[in-house]
Length: 276
Ligand SMILES: NC(=O)c1ccc[n+]([C@@H]2O[C@H](COP(=O)([O-])OP(=O)(O)OC[C@H]3O[C@@H](n4cnc5c(N)ncnc54)[C@H](O)[C@@H]3O)[C@@H](O)[C@H]2O)c1
Image 1 (spheres, rainbow, N blue to C red):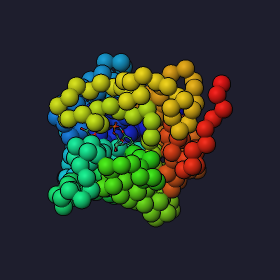
Image 2: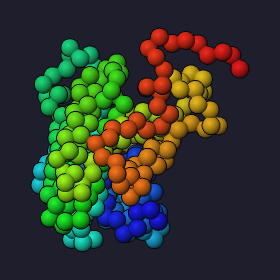
Image 3: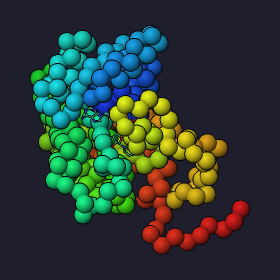
Image 4: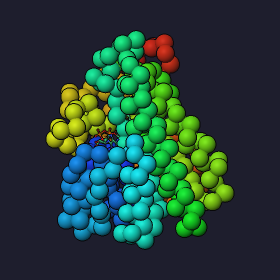
């Protein structure tokens, strides 16, 4: 019970990483406010948690809208008495999942992705931090950014910019809020992430990683780690669990790559491995 009685709000938790982690956090004793922009997704996750004996409420929240994020924090306080953790997890990819050329993108494309991926973190952190300061017992802010904050993926320059910006907010918030006992960190995923991210909002929530949906050969990865299975959402959720738990009580301002670290594990010049 590493999260016993902690009250945790998670944005974008009707699918993917947030959904999986909400269930893991509940099994560790947390009370969860699940939220998502797609109507009904969050309520379904909360119902699953409640059916398993946990405490959760699901609400529709669009992280681009200030009053929605305020309602998320207010719901945590009204339902569970306070907020201990705000996890700004909601995010969107580039239009057409990277198939659009940068030169063909529009200012509307830019404003849309900034509104969710960057303004969403800003609003979630700022509004939750005000409540945490008023409560007076510290608090914990977590953002989901991406390995794209550090390196380029073809077709994702605007996405990379928003995720690098998210890591910037994390460092700045950590420095400014530390005196209130409030920590801020980012989880920067690479592998084992939600296949729904590449699907339209009306798609069924699959609860699987890309890596689970295709033939898995670790030899073809930057990090050829063979543990007999592909990486999963749960592998990412475990880092989130560590970061929101008191095990990370002295960790703040960190932006940590989750799952196999392929991005940083190899030099740009690829030397081949010896055959087995
Ligand atoms: N899947 C990946 O390839 C990948 C890789 C690295 C980082 N990430 C990041 O991980 C985070 C979680 O995504 P995921 O992989 O679980 O994908 P996902 O699509 O399964 O889940 C993201 C959820 O965010 C919700 N959402 C989108 N816009 C929103 C808004 N305006 N307000 C509130 N909710 C909104 C979606 O409805 C969805 O339920 C995102 O920040 C994403 O950028 C994803």
